[in-house]
Length: 244
Image (cartoon, rainbow, N blue to C red; front, side):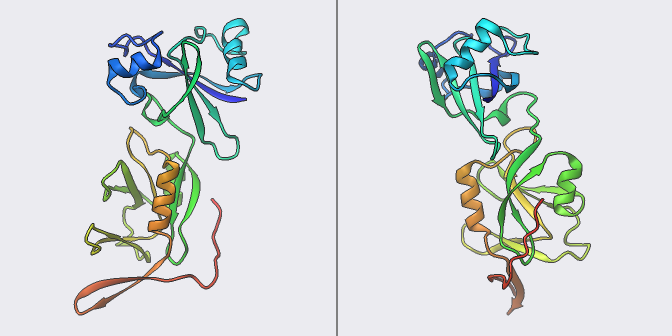
């Protein structure tokens, strides 16, 4: 089983939530679930066992190879990673066992994912969900040059595009519209939509992936009509999607 173990950092634990049950933690911190900003990743890797209770035993009775941290205790959070998608389901170690919780690991200190899941948009092609690397070279390769973050949404999500896309001859890709449906801006060249709630770019949640994939699904052609820029979606005749 591939897991990630998050434990409360005592230096950040101003409310003394270590060893505390989930109900008490939520009442004290006034958070819907837990405060990710006080958790540090203590371990990530494969451990023997097929259940969380077996994982718990491994971190107390035997300890995984290479792990020199403390035993697993109440208030620890365990993420079980899906090997195919890279996404994780998280569980709080409560007094009587494990409780599934919402836990955004991108908000933990020092979080640096190797890859993130994004909605990728390219001129003349349908939008798609892609998994891309988070290194600067990977990000620049995705947009074809220097990157720029653009924040047109109400939630902590941004568009990452080519910084010089409007100047270097790239094709117009998608229109960004306001709440009134009017065009606010046009993004030139390939771009991706990702989470921007932490210090680094992060994966979109499953609902966000569906939302922005639907919103930006079809490519658009652009022209002026009576002095106003018009963007019309169209279905590509032939899909030639490239894989990252």
